[in-house]
Amino acid sequence: MTELAQEFLQRTRQALDTAFQGYFVLKDHPARRTAGFRNVIIFGQTVRKVLEELPRVSDEFDKWHKPIRQEFKTSVLMKLFAQLLAEIRKRETDAIGSTARVVGFNYPADVPKLGKRPAYARELFMGDEIGGIGWEVEVLPGVVEKYYAIVPAAYGTVEEFLSFTAVVQTAKDPRPIDAIKVCEQFITTLEKVLRGAEQHL
Image 1 (cartoon, one colour):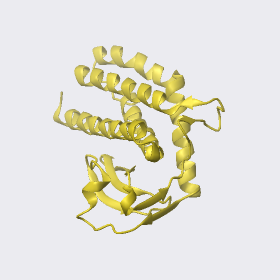
Image 2 (cartoon, rainbow, N blue to C red; image 1 turned 90 degrees about the vertical axis):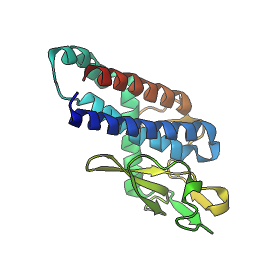
Image 3 (tube, rainbow, N blue to C red; image 1 turned 60 degrees about the horizontal axis):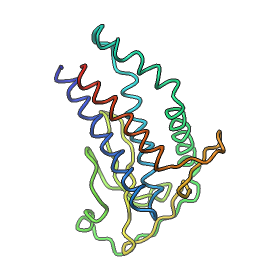
Image 4 (cartoon, rainbow, N blue to C red; image 1 turned 135 degrees about the vertical axis):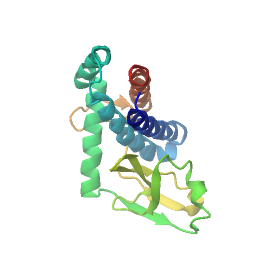
């Protein structure tokens, strides 16, 4: 594996780790499940795109990768998360239901209270256009996404912009979806494919 390919896969691994952080927020912090769900979608989709578009390096690699590309294009699970990402982007543009109230937060002393800082985090943001708080993360060179953090109740409240309970729906498919279950399926599928890429490159 070349040094460039190794760095590329390391970045992808870190993005997937950030998606897993979001999953554990979704699973273990019901009051902040929206932030966790969003982080799974955003960072998971970054990983999916990278894995789908890996360049051909050898006949052996292409033989392994070709059916994965096809599966990503036809998978109901992957299509669902593409739809969810599109809906998040729309809500970000429309700035729907976005309010944030932060009190008594001392920077930088209180930053660790926002939870684990994602890898390649560049700077903290507070009260952005959708009312969120978290870090700007350079998931790949030149590609920056926002990771939304959990705000401790003592420091304020955030009215979250993608509202749902333990069940989520999309505009294109009104059937209820278990958010925790589909997120687990999504990121574990990505994890399996990333391990395969690391072995074949």
